[in-house]
Length: 322
Image (cartoon, rainbow, N blue to C red):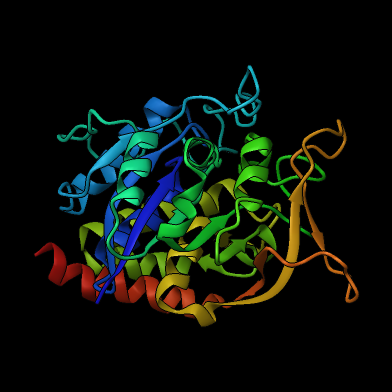
């Protein structure tokens, strides 16, 4: 049986690759995609999500628009994180594929999450790869939703590697109160995939060229999105001609768990300090008195990721997309 999955996204380029992977892999049943404010404003994350699903012929997968702001903060702190008109932005406001023909559902993301998890007859995997505002709000309304979830796989945080500040990774920093709620919610299994892992699974221009050569919609789009990321990083924080595609590491993990190596740790989020707000505080002490609440990925295999991308977006992508 395929694994039932809900993706929660703030769709820019790496979310787009993760969506295509989950929508096309035969072992995954993507039953819905919820959107949240993050890489770009909510209207853009929703529009981009619809674009991606239409482009690969999966407009049958419903999209639900979620929260347009953090759960506790009056302003969204990431608004000036990127200059959208510069070459430093790996996302852009609109993905470079045609505008969507389909529309999002009338039901909101939080309502969809609550209704779906309450009525679930089998376990569902949640894969939030943006700020955790939608998931936290659903849990605030009904904490028992954790019972319907077999695993939560979060892209976020950083231990030795950060990006938006010297202490924090973007997804967690963008809504730290939400992240703290999700980490402390009591899920039976929670896997956290931070920058420490995703920066080890870089995707190269060579892989992009092979994706482009496949001539499938997914291969062409993935090549285009990843190439933009490589151009934006431009060797400044990664090796030349390669870049991280953070979110797809989470969906790849669902079918090839060995792509990451993990440690069971207790993780909390700093929600108060001006210097370290949004930092994922990972207790790596060997004698820690705190019970682990997450399996934290501290390593990832770039070869496995490249193999999966080429398999799903070229071979499988051709058969799925006709």
